[in-house]
Image (cartoon, rainbow, N blue to C red; front, side):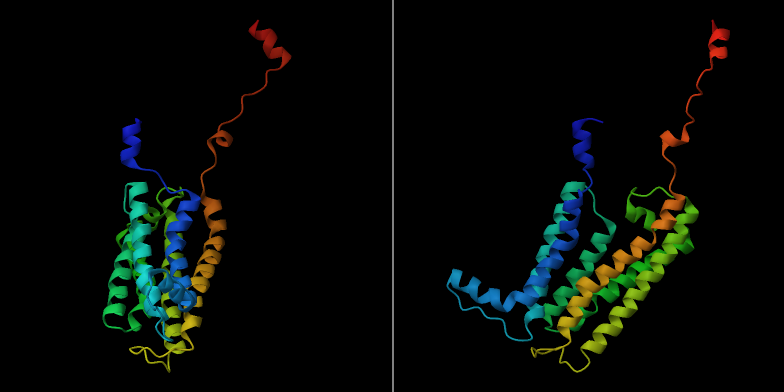
Length: 245
């Protein structure tokens, strides 16, 4: 493959770059939400403005900064890999639509429902793939795993159920935590911080644990290394050497 062909094809993100693309926008969201009230006055002094964030407005600031951060991560991923990652694209569209509605209509409900919609959509796509005999999960892993079709089907079923469970969990969580809050106003909501922690840390940790539990299935069906599959040459005995001479 020539240098020009490699450049046109792009390259996979390294571990650090992949982590930055996945977690960078979430880090921006967390900093803006939990530290925005402290950072805003300091930033205001730099530009000679009086910037403050009122109680209850933290979510709007976090969403407003999360969207461009996600866009930067998305553009970098496309530029580096010379392709559009399917899950990143779907998530980006949902983030753009629901984030915009949150800011334009000044209603936090749309962003609270974002994880529900994302997880439910992933679950529905994987389930549809099972019925149509299309292996969408294999496309998502993008050659990282080499498994037989039966193993992919089992893995797809598990992930479809898992994403559906996350969608239900998020819907129950935000509706319970924000049950007494005015979601269209600027009043502070005591349960909002708990939901943010659940969204960023809770669901991420649960996803990592779930993925780790798939390791036995993956290891059981991974093809053996070519070196171990190739039989070692037999050692010649003294009698064999005499026969050859």
